[in-house]
Image 1: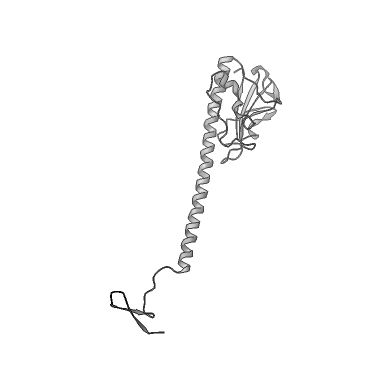
Image 2: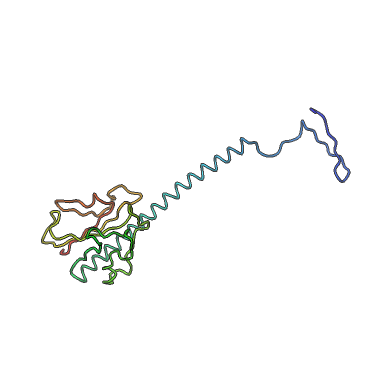
Length: 191
């Protein structure tokens, strides 16, 4: 049919010339469509990675804000009562926000009205949570004259190596708690 001109009639009765050799092609080729699909896929992947990083940084920012609120509440509790409070964990170990009942985490702060609600980690899992412990005076080589001391930690930030660059840290001659968590804050009963 090469070079043959087909004559067709449309409904109005006028002739339509269709030349199969010289007709213009319309639409996209498979290669062009595949290129567009690949480019869209690459852009989507880049956006997803950027969005994921943004979420991680946002959760870490919330963790730092929580830590500052908890630090201020602990300091206020010490100022009001002249003492620090012990953890309420069942087995006497670290009190953690990831336990079965996170509403009880550091409840002494709420009871003393130093904070309305103790914040918990945005993810609050076994690997990402907050924890608190009260040590007896002199533990790990800490100064006995300064009395008991409490340690608060953020376990496993998402965007920072351990320890966090601006970690206030806490250590005594026998132990450095900053190496055990990404963020550590310690406070003595006696200044």
